[in-house]
Length: 96
Image (cartoon, rainbow, N blue to C red):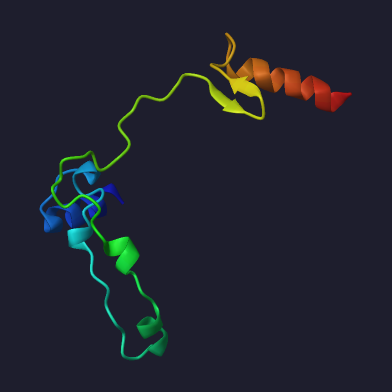
């Protein structure tokens, strides 16, 4: 699969996926005469380039915070022993 992706990137003149992120100039809407529903689809909003000057980053570049908040709880690094400790606790709870 990676080889296929590299082949498509080469056809587009890019070396990495990051180089084509946000490149709406590489996309176009194609009408299919055998499918009349394609004429009802308008992709203009998706194909619009919000930054034609290229001054801004085209993908998320900020660092993520270490702990992710979900439902008021923070998900942190696994405890020492990692997955085995977590699975061991789960097995004891299920055995009850």
